[in-house]
Length: 209
Image 1 (tube, one colour):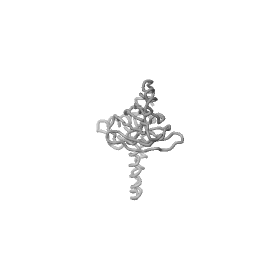
Image 2: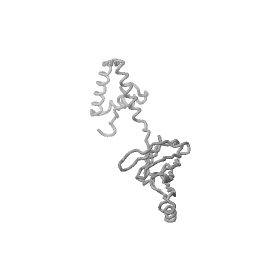
Image 3: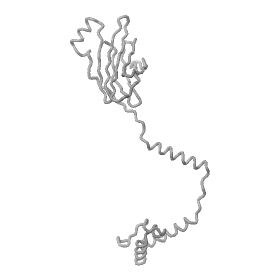
Image 4: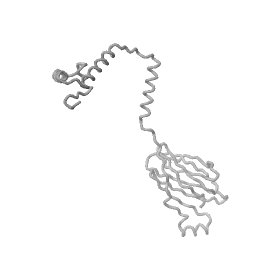
């Protein structure tokens, strides 16, 4: 079929249903009268049969439970299209460790009670830790503060021993993002900080001053 005689199906439907303005209806009627027997006539015949059949079919209203099920499925579909509440998971990087400064290492060696300061940075904020050995036992106290970019306080802090893996502590920060974990064993740990917006994982750390 050449471009001069080709008529879109939607245009033929509008013509058959009487939805076209009078001038367009007359123009299309004239084209159909002058068109050579082709796919246009086949399409027109098929559409006429389809429309006639559709007028003979009566669809009954579905039962109430079917309507309710369809309505619920549609609501579930809409819910599935909504953006999920994605938890942003980020890894923090160590940017400062006082134990790696030779001058302070000598002081710790002479006193045996100096604290160790660490600072971590992540996309959602910074974390400052202070490890203080306890003079009366072979344990340490961990002080920390999270400086979150978002107002996400309070935050949840989970401390895990890495070998064997077990939870050592689970606390909630105050409104300033501060927390304290006393009586901790001298061991390798990992720290996870979380809120409803993000989760920060710190690299493995050995709890020594």
